[in-house]
Image (spheres, rainbow, N blue to C red):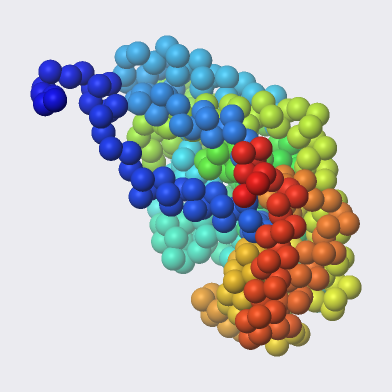
Amino acid sequence: MVITIGSLNFGQIFSLMQRDTITFDLIKKEEDRQQKGLELIASENFTSHQVMEAMGSALTNKYAEGLPGKRYYGGCEVVDEVENLARDRAKELFGASWVNVQPHSGAQANAAVMLAVLSAGDKMLGFDLSHGGHLTHGSSVNFSGKLYQPSFYGVDKDTGTINWDQVGIIAKKEKPKLIICGASAYSRDWDYKQLREIADEVGALLLSDISHPSGLIARGLLNDPMEYSHIVTTTTHKTLRGPRGGMILMGENFENPWGLTTPKGVIRKMSAILDSGVFPGTQGGPLEHVIAAKAVAFSEALSDEYFHYVLQVQKNGRALARAFMDKDYKVISDGTDNHMMLIDLRSKGLTGKDAESALINADITINKNMVPFDDTSPFVTSGMRIGTAAVTTRGLKENDMAKIASLIDKVLINKTNEQMIIDVKAEVNEWMRSFPLYAETANV
């Protein structure tokens, strides 16, 4: 039978399209990889089915530039409800008075804040990338280091921790307009109170990027930045266990410090300045399907089950750090307060590149990472970063952390022994069969 395409509607055409088996076979391959292996990358986690369902919904079809009630497109009544739901849940979760849930990532959230509060060439003070900071906190290869004038603070060489008094000394010398705290590889808590005092003393705004520990912060397991920070940014994945995305928050809204006004002469609130930094400043239409998934994740994060989850993440982090130190690995700062640890491998005669490569072959995923005062390149590194958020989602507990450390140690000691690594891989795969990601993968 010959079918004339022109006589069919789009739904009928879609039903006749050949399934893209190449792409979906690759997706299945990735699902199998995640199920079979130990996922220890600190910035990764596993979302729930309902988070993924929201991301794959019809909301992906809708354009919605602007904010709820103030869109540049018609037909936004439903997505307005979705976005307001996400905003309300985020406010409840973090104790915030204002949020913007539209940033596509943590980097986009930081870019929007900087565009809103800085001018090109303005000074900013951030945590040094080579000591555990983030690209968007002033790295020379990132927009933040190209558009603005960054200076940095780092950790003490002996303790591996930040000396807050030293941060104050640097701030007084540099007089930045923005001070950024937060990290991608720092295992200790932050003194937001003292940082705010430093910011006030030098006339700077304080931006707290809590992308990594945000889930622990939201449920009261770490210091809360909301009371002291002018602005807070976060990703919505990592310990928050939502879709990949970003968010900007404020504990209290306030009048912008530069006296910027509306056309009617009213001083604009900081929330309006930040909203403009997102759209039209750095983004176009928001991803409403992702925002729906954020709403789902925020609801999950408000549950009692999630509290017990992040509490276990923290317990597992401490147990895993102890297990590595018991095997004479150098854990920077001698432990962790959150979900991650940074391990200096130089005492073991290894590079981060060596470790990452050998462990991948055993289906154990970590990432190579610079350590403070590193003497190798970022492509080699002297360390590895490990986190417990994803394995805790799988259901692993403190007593499993010693086994993880032993498996990693076995691979690294025998990194050139192919048979040994094959044996460890088989052990990992068999072990993970007892911790299925989703019900339908239980027999993979």
